[in-house]
Amino acid sequence: MNASISPDQLPVLLRQHKQEHLLAYLDSLAPPAREQLASDIVNVDFALMERLYGKTTPVAGEDTPQAKAARATALEDVVRQPASADDEQAWQSAHQQGLELLRAGKVAAVLVAGGQGTRLGFPHPKGMFPIGPVSNVTLFQIFFEQIKARSAQAGVVIPYYIMTSDATHEDTEKFLEEHNYFGLDRGTVKLFKQGTMPAVDAATGQLLVGDDDLLVRSPDGHGGILNALAKNGIFDQLAERGIEYLYYHQVDNPTGILCEPALLGFHAMRRSDMTTKVAAKRSADEKMGVLALVDGKTEIIEYSDMPTDVAEKLDSRGNLMFWAGNMAVHVFNVDFLRRITFGETQLPYHTAHKKVPFKSAEGEVQSPKTPNAYKFERFIFDALPLAYKTLVVEADRKREFNPVKNAEGNDSPATSKEALINLHRSWLQQAGVSVPADCVVEISPLFALDAEGVQARANELKLEGSSVYLK
Image (tube, rainbow, N blue to C red; front, top):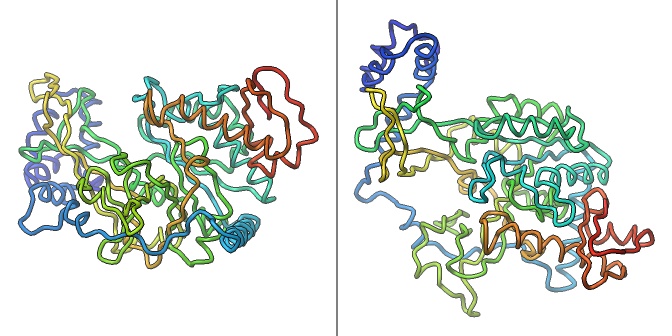
């Protein structure tokens, strides 16, 4: 932001923004650590940080997330799972339309892969987590093979963009190189890092320094993908490739359908700027953000902002009014993303009050036992109310949404593997293939993307043994 500032101007800049405490840190360091911290400091957008810190104090009458949730109403226009012959025809038409978009080379995919597998007890990028019930293949491999198979189906190359973070970039790049990008052409895959935001002391708004003698920073949220796309020249690359639609997904759901033709087709036919896939919540208290209408606009309300009495509301048929859980699967018009990246309608920042270790001016590392700092991040779903036209499409939850989030219980490796086994067993049975009761089956996307793909190869199959991996 202020990279042109010379070293002798830095004290003036820091005093101007009431951050002169950083001078003591700079004075305590020897080169090159001093230069590295100075470079970090001059790249801070101080005006933005002051504005964000100013918003951490509630203002009387300000519209809060809880107030917005209280006046939310049910979605009105949702493409539900097919329940009639007419529905089936509509889904088939959308599927065909989506295939045409893929064949025309108008679609790219982007994977958000900035998280570690910490909650799983896995000290690596989550995409490296082994999830194949027979093969032990990783989440990354399943996704890359899906893109390869979908590209073959469409007869064109589908570019794949992977957003990493400071914590995952190096390991992810090394892992993919070691595995030759799982068969994808290196030129069609691009890794890029999301940005970071400095953390500030909650009491004073002062920037914090970490034990690495740099400012304490944290990822700027999945909404940071917009700035990252721009910074890394990806918008220009998409334009050069003639890409009009971007399929967005996250790294933890191995049963997700990448570049699903029907989803792309509905998006295009309804002239949507942003289309979101949803899964019916298991219960009112399930920890999923929900899609709803707020003041006539489609929004996602975080589960933590949803009052219990609102979450438990029922409709006239006794079903949950706010049933549509966010799967973090979206289709975007690239033009829409450009508009909200470079135009006036920017994504808002959200504030999190967290325990953040830091180094004191005396050089001692402090590990607070209570929240002491604010972190700031953006969420990609905040693009929904900025869109001229949105669409919500329901997924078959059992088939499509089996994420790996927790070490045990729901949404764990065990439940995700079980879902993969059951899904692939059902594909084989639909194709008329006899599957022994005690046989554990797994199907690589390179063998088949769906039940129809298995049907086309059914004559090749004769399952033997207690476990089978078709690839």
